[in-house]
Image (tube, rainbow, N blue to C red; front, side):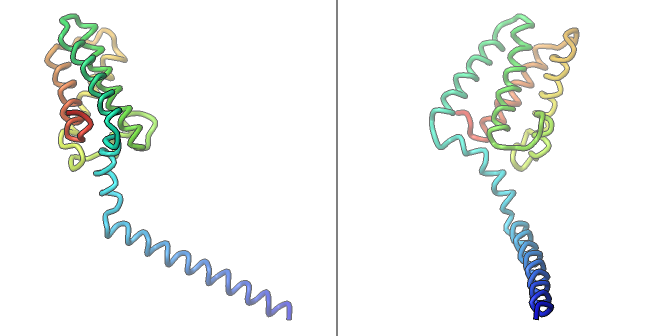
Length: 161
């Protein structure tokens, strides 16, 4: 009697495991077929737009960056790029992109989400050069290119006007 009950329990365990694997596989196939993850990444950029407050704050922060960019001293130019990079990274974090660094988070973005992702990578690498090597010589054009790359991406994602 006890052996029969144990056999039934073992059969139910195996059946439960099999059904779990089967339905889990069906869920994964459904996610892939419906491109749910891709749609999530495309719409995640718009989550801040549910309120005007974050957009206004972003526009204010961006105006400060542009003021720095308009100054002719190298320190303000460098800070403009660093602040633009930080602002963009903060948005990536709010979008809940995984990673410990901005570079890690950028790996989850492709040109279908941000068309100028290559320019963002260049700007981020320039920012790293500036931050990690204070002697690194940088031109105004390089800084402007980087800041404009972030600005274009922010506008494409509709975080800014």
